[in-house]
Amino acid sequence: MTRARRWAVIGGGLLGLTIARRLRAAGSAVTLFEAAPQLGGLASAWRLGDVTWDRHYHVTLLSDFHTRAMLRDLGLEAQMRWTTTGTGFFAGDGVRPLSNAFDYLRLPHLNLWEKARLAATILYAARVRDWRRLEEIPVADWLTRLSGRSTFERLWLPLLRAKLGESWRETSAAFIWATIQRLWAARTSGIKREMLGYVPGGYAAIVARHRELLENAGVAVRVATAVKTIEAAGAGVRVACAEAAAETFDSVVLTTTPRVAAQLCTGLAEPERAVLERVRHQGIVCASLLYPEPLSNYYLTYLTDASLPFTAVVEMSAFVDRAEFGGRSLIYLPRYASAREPVFAQSDAEIESSFLAALARVHPRFDRSRVLAFRVSRVREVFPIPTLGYSRHVPAASLGVPGVHLVSSAQIVNGTLNVNETVALAERAASALVASGGAPISLEA
Image (cartoon, rainbow, N blue to C red; front, side, top):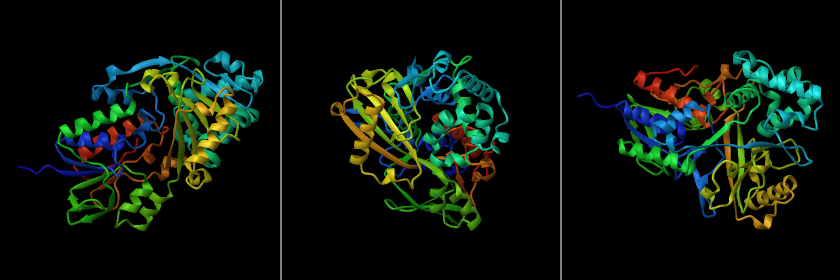
């Protein structure tokens, strides 16, 4: 009888969970390693006061077909709840609606001609298909040409800075194209309200279902087990952990960032190590707070005031039943930043003080003394900076150590990082890995 191939999957986020399930379904023996005490990665849940919910904000759109297929496969899609909500816009003089064409027409900071060019930009971007050409054009040049310099500086630039910091200067037009493509796909025509969905219990329920199916299928799930080194060992791959004895597998799949992969893998050639270490990521400092009631009816409020310490206001209770939060409102205040920025060195108390004071500027009726719980998440590497010609520099899926593969969000080259793109990458990678039997693979779209 042929021995089942032994795989180690490093990382228990949605990439690792999906790949581990597919490898096991194909007949392989699979061990999943996760350094954190819980599974989920960026989609993990945590405790905020007496509420358990997502550590970072997530939403499913009707057009997120890969996410919905994952939920269907997990037996959870039928539980999904769908609703509509609005979008807000704050430019220093109050929050205004920005949910439909009429709201755009009422924007006070752009004249009628500028609004027309803005609408034309969105319509044009929604119809573009050649993302590789856009990858060679600086995002500022592309948006300025389409929308005009005034609209770029008043609207687009603050939004780019909110997500990318000063790295917007190195970013290609493919970034804003991918963002518009996802949002446009969720609307039937024109600028209409899209449907937003969630699973009761949030990603805690989704990740728990993944784990249940993995363990029922015989996958060894090892949380709080940090891998220290990965190296070739004869015809196999040796995985060493601080918390357990080293083990040898036939193949290994890393679902980490490229930088972490370079740290873990011994025996990489220096040119390959340099490719892995060259990928730069944007991180996030994301505050969550519970408040007695909603601050607005908007799920997302865009901010163009650069003096604010966070880059958006996200009110989950604008579309999630408040019963999930004990009748309260759950609000996220994200700040996208590089790991080198001072916000990562600030204490929780410093972040709480500055963030809540700024929230009162956006919503003057907000009373910080009524905050029921406040917590801060810090992740130094969330998504890669989509620099010019990014697809030419994407790390290979099969590394220089025989039997070792990398499946990372850094390999998403024609989309933005979200659950839908992550699941799509995981399924594509899993199919290639199963078909290869451990041989080198390619993930080029």
